[in-house]
Structure formats: structure tokens, C-alpha cells
Length: 255
Length: 322
Image (tube, rainbow over all chains, first blue to last red; front, side, top):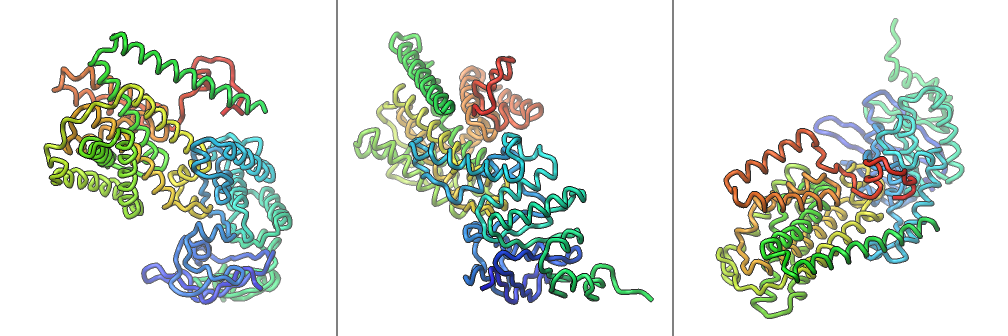
């Protein structure tokens, strides 16, 4: 069974159809890339999958179950986590608290236990503290756990966002331009990290990326989106030589 | 282990401080140093602290601008007076009913309005606050615009003290937990919070209901100190007064709210004789604070032993002490 299956998904804003009759499927532990020129509708697809937007038509199935139109927090609890193109951290909070918030879906004590400071509260807080630290360690952020999130350099903010997404314990991780603004070296490290977390956490990963070397290097399969529609799908080799893809990116051949 | 010891040590210190404070004031009242005038202001101070700390939960921590806090105070005041004065129940029942009634009102008002954002929410809550007042003015059972008088004075120093401590402890403990972090995440970034699995509507309503319940408590204490309760007391200006304390102290700082509530109460007491210039001075202070310290006196930080050490360059406390 496919991990995520999307049938005939459409969304328009006013008269503009951002995503049109979008079909998509991803298997367990597959690493798939979604590419396309600016404004092709990639982020809209992500927003539809995670419930930030409601689709006009079409269905989304997670492990065979219909999740179309559910609120984002429900979709998160069902196992889909994401990062954002323009990083959305909890800016005034510490690095540690950012991750702890993501752990809240599994909070190990009740509200009354926290008000009355029962032993279960202290045990639960200690557990959450340790769990959050583990996620930070994976991304080398544990040494700066008390820093305020907005004070971190760009690359670390990107890594923190992925750590936070992982802390919701997803089965499907959606990364929206994870390497945006990174230099080639950082991008390479990030790719290794993405591969590593996929194996470590048995994740299925879907990512949007502009950096072609990154997409071609790491993705097993690629979907190409242009004007809200899939124009090509296949392994990196096929995509590289696909005429329509080249046209979409570079314009039609002249002369 | 070290952390646990420190937590206990801190807890014992706090208890000692509270007992000492309580005993000192009780002693001063008994021997008559704190006369009636001081006692009135002391009561107002306690009530203002409860109001400011509870509104700060909604405005400061959840980031939802509510302008209807006096409305919940009114519901608490009238609900408690109906129980004690009209129906002859003991004060504690009056307080409990006051908090429940205000919480229920908070829930009924919160569910539809908390979908609104920013200015729209502010206007909606302002409207609801006024509706509560106007409805109370038109209910004959509670005396209409004249309200209810002849209420027994039951808000004594011990009652006030316990109410203030309970309010602060409940709200601080709530904020410093996973539930509090969920509430703060709504303020920080609603979309991100929602995608991280936080049901933002639920936590907004939770903060609104808890805040309203404590406003109801403040209303009950108020009604049972001043013998009389009138709907007009809880008009928009009262809501505004509470908002000023929260903004002055710093949105998202409980200690800031407490300090601002004390400061505003003392200021009001001093300016009582100069009623004409009172509002002018009040406004001037606000303008000055907004120009030079727009984040409020404490911003969203808390005042603690650590901050004193920082200010006076004392020994550095290890960063794990939080």
C-alpha cells in the first residue's frame, strides 16, 4: 500500500487554479522530490496535504485512510510533519522549548497535574526534557539549547525546524526547500543528514527543492509541477532528459 | 538530583516568604497601623493583581487581545452576591459559583469570537463586555441599574491573600508546563503551532475560560468588600484599566503584571485628591512608557533572583537554574 496517495486534487484562489487535478503517490520509506519553476504550486500542494488549505476537490489518503479536509493538528497526529519555506519557528522561545512544543501531542501528564505540581508532572517534564535534548543532539543543537530561536544563524534555524518536525514523531516528513539559502557545503551535509534520518526513523520523505544537484543526488523519484499540473514523473535520469521539463525551466528552445 | 534539591529549596523559601508577608500584614491590621484607608487600598491592590495576572494569561501569553475583562468581573460579582445576599449561602459557595459562572460566560463568548484575529477580536470582546453590563442593568432581580446593596463585608485579609496566591500559583504553574508552552505557541505562530499538532482553538478557549474564571473571583471579592455592587462599575473603562496594567507590566510577564497592578493601585490612591489631573498623569505615564519601553516594564521576562543577580552583577547563577 502506498504511504500517501493523492487523487485528482485541485485548489484555486479566485480565478487562478494553483493546483489542478494533481495525482501523486509515495511508498513507505521512499524519498521523493517535487520540483518545478517558481509559482508552480509546490507549496500549495504541501499546504493541502498538511491541512493548512482545504482542497476544492480530490482526495488525500494516508496509509489508506482518507485525511482530506482534516484540521492541521489532526493530520500532524496522524503522522505527517513538515517544515516551512520561510522558516516558522517560535521566535521568542528557546531552542529547547521549540522542540518541547512539538512533543506536546504526547504530553505525559494532565493539566490538573501541572497546576497541582503532582509527581507525574515532574516525571513527565523530565522525560520531555530528555526527549527534546535527544532530537537536538541529532542536529548538533544541544549545546545551544537555551538560545532564543530567532537569534540563531540561518542554517541552524533550518536544522531546528527539521528537529522540531521530527519531534512530532511523524511517519511522513515533508520538507519545503530545506536547503534554501545554504552554501554547497551545508547543502551536502544536509543531504547526508536527510538520508540518515530516513534510515534512523524509518521515514518517508517528500521534499521541495530548487537546488537541482541536491534533488538529483538524493531523490529516488521526482515529480515535476508546472502551472499546477504534473508534467513529468520518474527517476532523476529520466527527468534530467525530459524535454517538457527542460522547457518549463529554461523556456522553449530558440532557433 | 541537584535540580530536585534546588526546586525544594526554592519552594520552602517561597512558603516562608508568603507566611511572613501574611503574618506581617495581619499584625499591622490587628494593631491598627494599617487603618481603614490603607486596608481599602490593600484590597484594591489584591483585586487588581488577580485581574491583571488573569488578563495577562489571555493577552500576554495567548496573544489574544481581549477588552472585555470587566464583563467577567461583573458576572462574578453578581453571581456571588446572588448566592450570598439573596440566597444566604456561605461566601465560599458564592466564590465558587462566581468563578464557574464567569468561566461559563468565557466559554460561550470565547468559542465564537476566538476565531477572529487582532482588532476584530478586540472589538468583539469589547462588545460582549458591554452587553453583559447592559443586560445586568435591565434585570430586575439584581436591582437593575441601582444594583444590590447591603452586601456583608466578607473579603477579609486572609481571604484576599489566599485568593491572590491561588490565582498566581495556578496561572504560573499552568504556564510553566507543556500546556503553557502550547498556549504560548499560539501567540508565537498560530500556523506553525497548528501544524505541530497543537489544537490552537482549544488552547485559546482554555486560556480565555481560566482568565475569565479568575476575573469572576476578583468580582466576588470586590462585591463583598464595598457593600454595594452596580453594573456601571464594570464598564469599558474598568476593562481598559486592567489592560493598562498588563501592557505597563509587559505582555507575557506575570511578575510584570503584579508589579504594574501594585503601582497603578498606589498611583490611583495618591491621585485620589487630584481627580481632575488624575487621568492626565495616568495617560502621561503610559505615553512615556510606550515611547521608551514599548514592551512594558519587564517585556516578556520574569523577575527572579537570577535577574537581581544580573542587575547587580552578583555571582553568576548556573544556566541550568531556571
